[in-house]
Length: 452
Image (cartoon, rainbow, N blue to C red):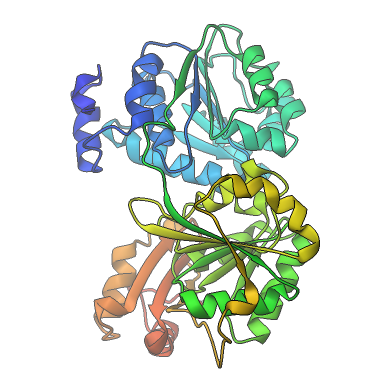
């Protein structure tokens, strides 16, 4: 299970060690030898199993750094997952200079992407629609491509991307390595796999992976909002993702929770990209304890420690249920999954009763939630400056712990983007930090500051 057993360069092994990659996960141990050998791979592994590093290490090892042409294309179902994959690849790519990884997703300036493509890239990570748009405009050239990857192929098909994927493939060389990664492989995914892959190595590691330790409870309820608040009051989770089946329900539920003094934000397909970023940053840095989401909007969220998942609406399929609750109980932590359903939906829950560990409970048995509130641990401040201003996390930290006089424990996660930086401040110190940043300077320069 040691990376040194693979035919990797010493520079890559040193970087993996620096990143804390000491032992391979099951998917890495099983898939990497085949990927490094240039074989097609059809891999089944659940979210959080280390699959990004599995294909990322393979892609980077086989890269010709001196050849400034797109050699690998990774398609993801959502912008958030593409961003997560690109960030992980950049970390893995630190072993060599000048490896350019470009992200092509919707919601970002097409003109800006054109400018980046003019200087070429080694690896492109993107969503099918935006990648296809660049191909049709001839701003993206895949004639030198040698590796094509579909990440979360099952969700791609759920989201109706099959036609766009097939259109992208028309631009991809037939002589290539193809890698498919998916949490589940139903008949539809298998059909696509057979079209794409040549004599693939089949990798299935679910049996080798430790199952998430999740307490699963189902509550029949005539008043879902009341039951939800009772559950939150009883369990007191640090953070929660609540799933609804529609965008409108996500928006309305977040508003109803706020009216009940329970802090929440909604994420759904109608948000602009900057609004999505604002919401995701706040949830990831503990500036809101509850995220209300649709399945599509929540895909690709990288929340490492999630205390609870709530199915406010019954999922349409058991696969969706598995995807939803699989976000909690990771890395040895115990997770909680709660599903609410109306008495009229009793028949639909029969499918879930095959697992004896699942508890079916009456919502009336839950104690009343008296004066229950959920407030965020942190408040997010936005600084109108980022990477383009050469602003670093250390600069912000230094300003706040220096002249502003804040303790390090009061400063949470700092996220820096091209033109903005987000910093989480403990709620009791947020006003002090805001006043200092508004009137003071960072790196001898004044920046506009506002609260999210």
